Amino acid sequence: MRKQYAFNLIELMVTLIVLGIVLSIAIPGFTGMLQRYRLQSAVLEAQNDWLFARSTAVKFGGARSPAVFYVAKRQNNQNWSLQICTITPCSEGSTLLRQQTSEEHKGVELHSLSDALKENKFHNFNGLPNFTQQQFINFQSGQYQLQLQITATGLSTLCRPQGSISFGGYAECV
Image (cartoon, rainbow, N blue to C red; front, side, top):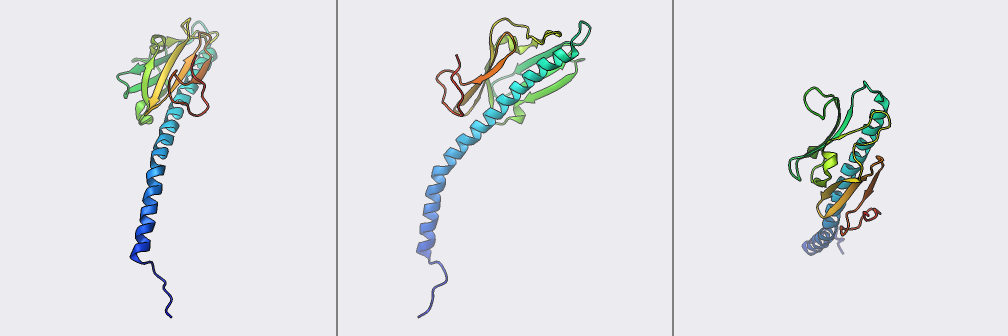
């Protein structure tokens, strides 16, 4: 009797079919996971930038110190930027302290934002934003959405817009 050390064609085909079935199940789940990760990364960076802008305004803190601006620019859903700058609202002559752009977050759209966040100037003494009602920035990646909500006192929270798909333990926005 001779021992058989190789695969025959039928065994190889069965293995490839099983591998194809497993991959067809796993790839859509991986795509969703990647979309959620990219979305969370962009929103958390936006929240950190907001906190940085507030603390920088307090750090400068004086009547003659430069103003700190948080500016959201949106050409369309796919092309956007969030900027933190001083002196004038992120134009020529101002100092750009931080910037986050859509190129850094492929597949993440700036779905909507409040008008007050298109250009917010912080109070230099207490770091309060220049608005009196809650504001928001809504990001989307694929079918997932997250919202950065900012109160008139400058506190920020993350939540899911009402009716959006649940993920990551984020509560639905109020």
